[in-house]
Amino acid sequence: MRKRQISQEKKQSIIKGISSRLRERKHITFSYIFGSFIQEEKFSDIDIGVFVSEKITKESLNFEFDMEEEIKSFTHLPVDVRIINHAPLSFVYHVIKEGILIIDKDAGKRADFEGIIFKKYLDFAFFRRQYLKEVPNAPI
Image (cartoon, rainbow, N blue to C red; front, side, top):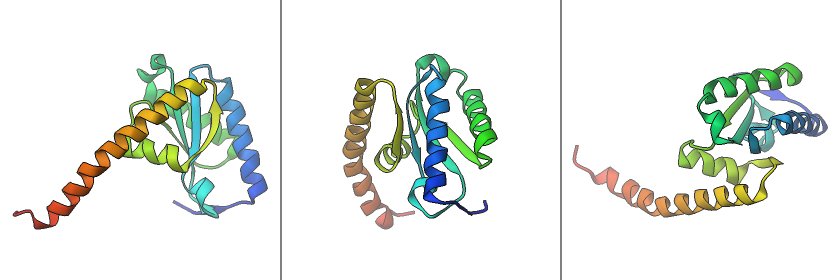
């Protein structure tokens, strides 16, 4: 994917526009922007993680595609939207830890979700480290 570069002012304007559009969606409870768009000078796309009401998760793939197309239509940039409700633990951990919260309609629900993710991730980290220590010596 081609790397792009825009000014910080333009990035802030894009983030405000995305926030405004996501806020209009009643099923979105909170949302983050993460990845190269916020972490690097040059970026390939805009990564967005959304937590949605359980009703929408049944049509999650269509929801993600619809949101990508809507945001792409006004930013004119590639967009990748992911529902984080049931996404892999390590992915969600990095979205929360490294991303920027742009929508927060229910701070209590968000705080509970973040707390659960951090606890599970840190609990799992011990076993992951143990596994990675033992793998190089495993007989194959």
